[in-house]
Length: 323
Image 1 (cartoon, helix red, strand yellow):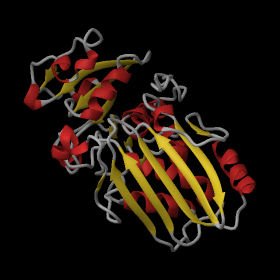
Image 2 (image 1 turned 90 degrees about the vertical axis):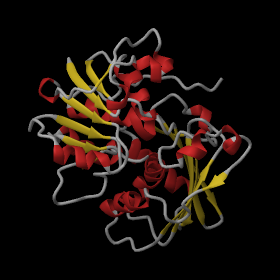
Image 3 (image 1 turned 180 degrees about the vertical axis):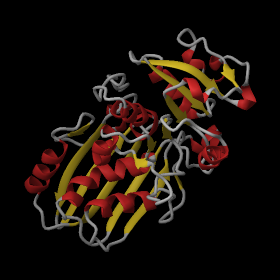
């Protein structure tokens, strides 16, 4: 069994992570850390786990007796934690914050988008930086084109994400009157996940010199992210479809659809569903994911499976909650 510890156990993403881990056949949760909630039941915070989880939060860090550590901390805190705490050299770590997503010679963290970096995780990586949710949705719409060097010029993205998005303002995300029947623009053209998307594209297309223009919107939904990505392209629809089919043929969670996908098609799953259109000279790719699963905790489990040589879909066979 893989013995796991979680730091930052009261966060949104930690609740989803715990839900997946307690149902994973190869995992045992050793402890869930939260200094502010030490001694309280996990279900006092994550009430959806009532009847499924009987653990309590702890303020002890027993890192010597676990195999896998998940960091569910605020951006900026994970790096400080690793610098301040002696950790076993063989301890595998997955960080769900943004601290290690950008390549850094001082860090050995692998960028944990499985559809891009599956090989280094299978081949012995110890530390993984989980991608952001908008970055995941956008990158999966671009990876096949980038690999074939068919990303040219500027790329335009409109992304609508849920109120549970970790990068939105907490006061807005938690205030019903602010989000009900409303759509809010936040961080246009300056979103914090833009650098990791650019890094991903240039990993496969190093000579791309365009600009990625991202317009993020907070939608009146509790979970899910949809990204509409479009750019000039001389590919026709069939050529683009073949490029995507070839790229994702051996991946477990990204699928092409002949019709426009809805967020409800992926909510409560680790899937990404893509749809491709060619309209005039524009290639339009729609990408939908669950922001808390494929955009966060689900990919963390996927990455853990890769690190420990497990079948990729173990613990992630989930059905969408379309109705």
